[in-house]
Length: 145
Image 1 (tube, rainbow, N blue to C red):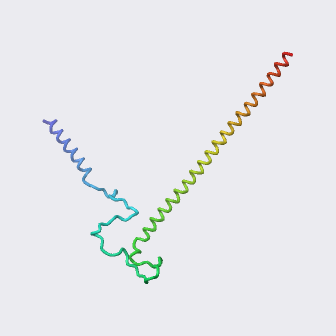
Image 2: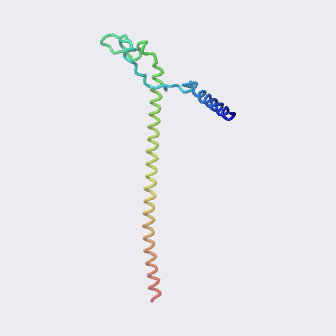
Image 3: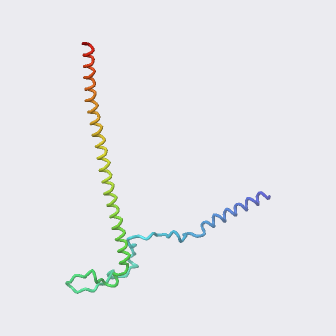
């Protein structure tokens, strides 16, 4: 009887441990949606009718960028930060690409130099070999005579 009671206590404690892990469905340190650069699409039924922004202008004249409507000012700094971040990332990407191309060029140049040096060594060795063979032939000829 005591072993059965012990087993039920163990099962209950395991159940509570498992339930305790899942009592909080979405912890606050991990938000569900990461902040993105583009605004989320809104359903047409929830969006009010009319233009996104009302801009005052004189017909026939262009709207100056320095004097936008109040509504368009909202979120401009945030968008600017996002654009700057994207521009910085692109600039860094270009730098890394240029560095990689330069490193590849250097590597290829070293490889070509090594090959050329090897060819020069082979030529020099072939010439030296011919010279040595000629010297030996002279020695043999001198020894015979």
